[in-house]
Length: 466
Ligand code: ARG
Ligand code: ZN
View 1 (tube, rainbow, N blue to C red):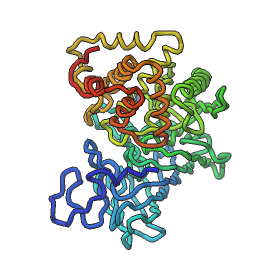
View 2: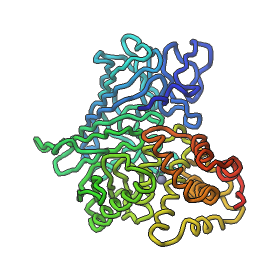
View 3: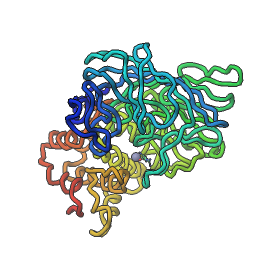
View 4: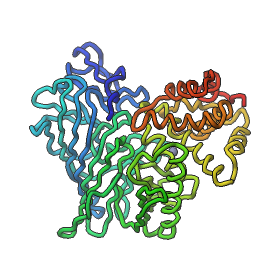
């Protein structure tokens, strides 16, 4: 997994002779020979992720105590060098780093902002598979300052933690390559005070083990996952487990305050997952479900296999949205944040499809409702095909993104449109996608020239003709 994450971008992995270029404020300037770049090459988020290697697997062995808010543990990272590496970076925000090893041998490290630079005793040759282990501890601090993203990352709560990391908050709880262009598999071994439940992605690998007042939960996600979808949600939870009608494992978990939402969350999650599998193609992961915690985030997040609802009882629309992300965003992931409409426009359109399926408003009616916004409306001034780093989750990325899909459906007809959704998923399952790949596939399947349509809907800062 993660084949083209670091190596294909202009900034990633390049080697600049020392002194050739002045260091840039974003940290992507001059690098010593053989150094992995401090960013993966996303021009809008220049210091997110890193260059020079691809992560294959994370093994996170972590302990957390809600009373002291102390997190400590070890992150084991298996990766492949995509260039010779005399040093490379991981992203990590806060904490005290104790010890770093590369292939079992102590390595030097430096820290600057959210960059952790690892300097192995001897350079890693291009193509080498290697293991990094980082021991660290401290009080996790979520990301707060950024105006329109709210609070995200590892958010301590009264009884545990609410962990939702989009776009780049994974670094608030583990060191890694914190950008969607490098997927990996995950193992979690999480130790918490007895009585607290630890929920992570994928499946429990055995019964939780309690010893000396502490319980250890082992989870593993065996399908490629981007860093922002990883979670270790902790707290008191009421659980309901079973299978959907089509046989997919289903787990719903709610904070005791939301006890009344448990059955609805469980039932709807199962029903909607099964329905999406008929529309988008086979469910990509080993289980479905959802978590309601009592932190009022003001948003939900499509954490892989376990979408998280922040302090509210979710209705059908948002459940349909977060579960659609398991296909659009989680199985098929964006390489660059500017393509975010490939996640949010599709998940929003899925809400409209669910309503249509329920016999409520048709997608055509919902489209018309939104299209009625006057020409001066903000939605027409923000081009959804170019999500802006300072306003990533703008309504246009969601609603105008969804309208783009409906405009496409009108133009190519239902048969080609729904074949396109399935083919898109089949061809890019567990992979990375770009807007250009989607528009090319739409043209291929429909046999129509669609440049004008996509240009007007995705890239113009004005209201498209309907
Ligand atoms: N992907 C999420 C959703 O559409 C939104 C996440 C918003 N993130 C944030 N930090 N505000 O459901
Ligand atoms: Zn979404």
